[in-house]
Amino acid sequence: EIVMTQSPATLSVSPGERATLSCRASQSVSSNLAWYQQKPGQAPRLLIYGASTRATGIPARFSGSGSGTEFTLTISSLQSEDFAVYYCQQYNNWPPGGIAFGQGTRLEIK
Amino acid sequence: QVQLQESGPGLVKPSETLSLTCAVSDYSISSGYSWGWIRQPPGKGLEWIGSIHHSGSTDYNPSLKSRVTISVDTSKNQFSLKVTSVTAADTAVYYCARLGRTGASAGTLDSWGQGTLVTVSS
Image (tube, rainbow over all chains, first blue to last red; front, side, top):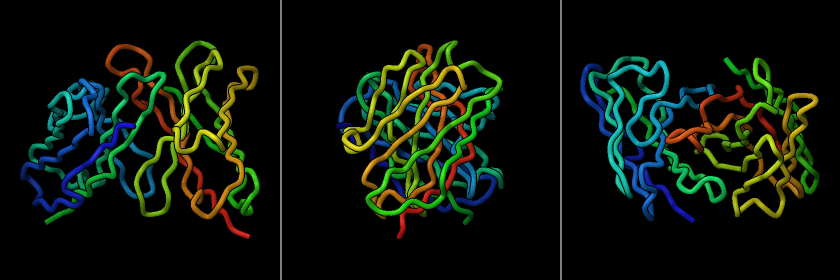
């Protein structure tokens, strides 16, 4: 079972600044890593897949990088609507095999 | 744009079976894709439950596998979730979603329902 660990649990950043969120896998997931954004009372929204490809309609200020076990989501020039909880998800060898989420990083306004 | 909508009882008694349905619109399930269930306990993170391919093959979270069944009804364009022997720990918002099927997106959750809260309590 692959365990996903996100850091930090909470990140405080000022609007207009850059945010960097990390995700680590307990074993290699190649580039089979996605990022989601979740706002209060809403379902998660897919931001990034394949570690670095933006999903349809996602602004260019969102970027993903990494492979293997270490991944990063970067949000350049934070907008007010970007303050939310972010989850990483691995889907290596699916199907079959597991899909697993990280525990989330809460991005809050500083 | 595919639409997904969960439905089912909002309250289930301990030891009973939780049953939810996800209705899919603006896309025919039998045309392809896999369809999944995810849950989120109040104030906590996301937990993968499992998925079903339109052909009927399934994949479950090992930690839930003994209690979970996911099925598909292509005639009604919907898929369903059953969780047996529920406890308070199964209280969560339950989401249905579509999984991507091509290349690097296979296994990602590209469309989600709005979620439905299921509370396990006597």
